[in-house]
Amino acid sequence: MEPTTRTSRGILKPQLAEQHFQLSRHSPAPDLSAYVDRYWVIDWDLRGQPPYEQATISSPHINMVFDPAKPGIFGVATTRFRYLLTSQGHVFAVKFHIGAFYPFIQSPVADFTDSLISLRDAFGPSGEHLQAQVMTTHDVPAKITLVEDFLRKRLPEYDENVTLVQQIVGQISEDRSLMRVEDLAQRLGYSPRSLQRLFHQYVGASPKWTIRRYRLQDAAEMLDQGTPDDWARLAAELGYFDQAHFIKDFKDLVGETPAVYASTTDDDSENDPRSD
Image (cartoon, rainbow, N blue to C red; front, side):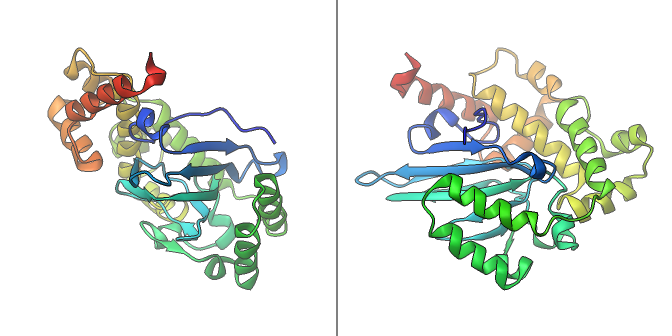
């Protein structure tokens, strides 16, 4: 099974991250591609080295994570997500398309935003059995086979709202000028309240949060390429009305200003022998 194309979107300071762990992504079988975005795998070996904390700006996806330290189905992380890597480890996970996990459980995914539910809570004893099987299997293709066999037996009926949610989030992701929920609602012909209810049930975060999250992912990705020449122009390109609001949003989520983030990214690149 071949890995999918690699991307660093959402991973803060990816040049530094690559020195501490290996990330691979794998595509689902065609019959599950409407529900599963990808499988992702992280491996690291820091034996004899200091621990490393990786931070991410996560997207509004639901992840089924098989992690020896903390397995479960993780809801949307509305704050910066951090994971401490120590010694040696391996994590395997299933990333569902935005909105596509709700049909499996028929319960608002906002109920476990910023938290997780166990596989047993979501699927009963069979979910707990799947967890044990996957976590005692060392071959990644075999893990994928176990998960796909499990999901095929539970494929839900078609839900047109899943398609609608993905179309809406696609517009948010691609149109950097889109910054207000009111503008999004007007474009789609929905009321802001209707969008709120839809996102609460299927996404797990509000439309306003989703818009801001994609703009800040865009910002981090651009800053990973180096310090911009014109900060005001960068803020405008990301859809912000002024530089001050952009700086505040970025610092609130990432924990440092865009200028500090860009400068440390430049330092990481200079210290990475692969940048020569």
